[in-house]
Image (tube, rainbow, N blue to C red; front, side, top):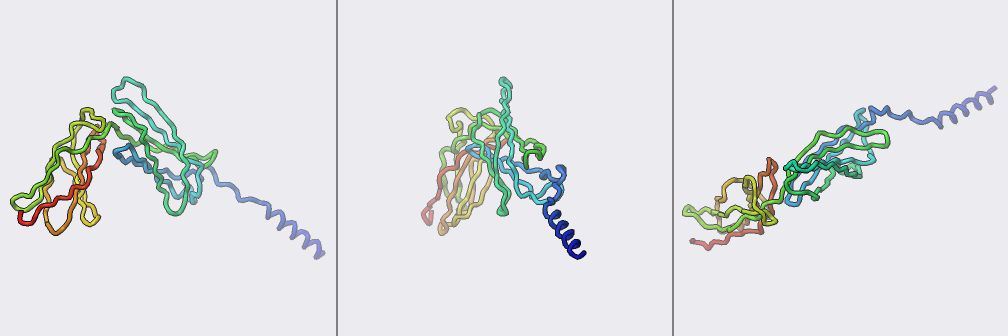
Amino acid sequence: MKSLYLLFFLMLILSSCGRKTAPLPIEKSIPEAPTLEIEVTTLGFNLWITLPEKTKGGFPLTKVKGLILEREEIPISGKEKSRIKQIKLKPKLHSAGRIFLYSDTDLRASHLYKYKIKIEKDFLVKTPFTEEKSAYWTIPPNFPQRISYALTEDKQLLLIWTPPTTDLQNQPLYGELFYRVSKIINQESITYELRETRFLDSFNPEIKVCYRLQALLNYYGTIIPGPQTGLICPSIPKGS
């Protein structure tokens, strides 16, 4: 009798070992929505994608099959049709961070670009597309021109320049210009943005201070930065 009970117990253990955990319902395994932000640079757009940590069911998101980034290119003139392109990305999830960068430099001047993204967790499970993020693009402005500096009567440093009149392809500029001044002291940088073509700063001949200038173009609400100048390190003799 004991041998029959032992045989039954062993069969029960063996049958339970072959069982698998029931898969999650699809609605609970769908990842939470990713986020998408556009950073405009002199070369194009940096698209910063933040991947979620969990699914909508609250379970950790440990892997994804890939991302689908959809880009729509719309001419401002309205004379051409818009073009839609889907780009497949394969980010790796790891504990060090879930921020993924995709740089889009294949851009045409006088166009509006719209982006949205979704996650493919596996063959069956996908998120909806995120809300669109958009930015305009044109050729960035050229360097500020005729940069000079002088010491004022009250011993302040005055930087002066004239606006660029062309873009980096030497074509006329269209749009509002303003400027970014980076002040560098001991490898630390402080940034100022201003509309005037002059910058007034305190001056101490004992401390080395350098500056970089760049023009910023407001193009249909998108701020497109031009390239930075080289370092400008004013040197004014003591007693001047």
